[in-house]
Length: 218
Image (tube, rainbow, N blue to C red; front, side, top):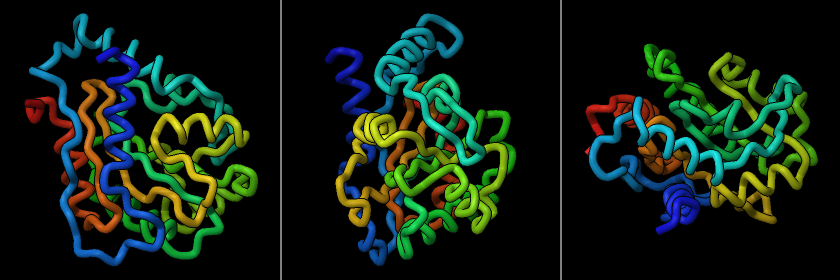
């Protein structure tokens, strides 16, 4: 499998396999699901690290986006590279799933103290960039104790946001039926997990801690 196809498989499988839509969050809690783990334990300071970065950069792209503070960023270089990330998809006019999941992520983040030195970053991507201005995202973030250095909310031009959503397997023409799966990944080793939105906050935190530990690779 070519590098680009492999990366697409990792990410799309993580976000789409068993994805739960916005109004399907009432199911019983489920554990995080393993998606793809590299073969063996890569030398994260050696040639494997360079190959991983090259593949990731080519797949995720450096599409320009805007943060909730109006700062221009490049998606791979400024947001993902070398990070331990938790990604989800929101729109600020959502009245059900998005606020619930954001509140749950805020609770999970409070249980992830100590992961800052692992490059922890939460990334909430708007699927409604026409209405979700940086100011709207900042106001939304302020409701959930999400105004912190390691939690970024992203918007941008519709074309650029659509590019990223398609890369992540989360593109939709109907915002009300968007993908509510959460994906956690360690960009340093290509270790990823899909987390169902009904998963308890403590399990989300435990999953991210698991991904942060290189000894858990197999």
